[in-house]
Amino acid sequence: MGLIVEDKTIVIPGEEVAEGMDFLPAAGTYREGDKIIASKVGLLNVDGRLIKLIPMSGRYMPKRNDVIIGKVIDISMSGWRIELNSAYTAMLNVKDATSEFIGRGEDLTQFYAIGDYVVAKVINVTSQKLVDLATKGPGLRRIRGGRIISVAPTKVPRIIGKSGSMVGMIKDATGTKITVGQNGLVWIQGEPEKEILVVNTIRKIETESHVSGLTDVIKAYLISLGLEVRNEQSQPVEFENQQQ
Image (cartoon, rainbow, N blue to C red; front, side, top):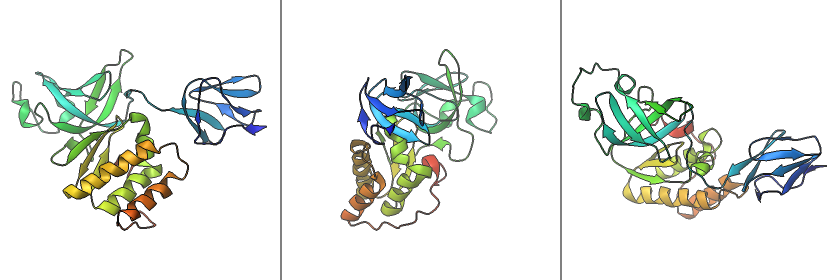
């Protein structure tokens, strides 16, 4: 009785993952008699008594309070249309963009122009999937310089790590600034060669996200690149929004 499949194992639909009543089914799993069964392909995640699956792929689904990186794709009288790396776009209204007074008919490109990337917070998602954003708040801003890469949104939790530990380790080792959006866009800024090291490290996390002890794997990888990795990370911040 108990777990049939080890934590952080990839499972397929119909596979039995646990037996007995010690565990409760959560996202991606269901109970059949005294067994918990996977309903989709995913990475098994055991959180206390809860058993859930982390999808291996999929588009980003906006959720309230998510911090994302988006691209300005249109400007209207009332604000900016933002691409989310999702099936849905979002609206950044003038009143949620800045604390400055913006007069009617004022040129909004002085704040955000088409093609700009912004770090924004999801403040509302309606049942029709209309998404509203805000760029007022700590760490929310227009992005300048650096490079942006796209990762699978389902891999974001592994890239961030517990309480920001993984991304904090990478930042400290490479001396770069990193912002990870929940929608799978990542901004990296630092010396060009260090930016490339960060990209390669993030790609390695994506590829090996199912591996247990991933933090130790990435630590060894960074050391192999000749980088210094401290045992204690200095104040890792989730989503790395406060690094400037």
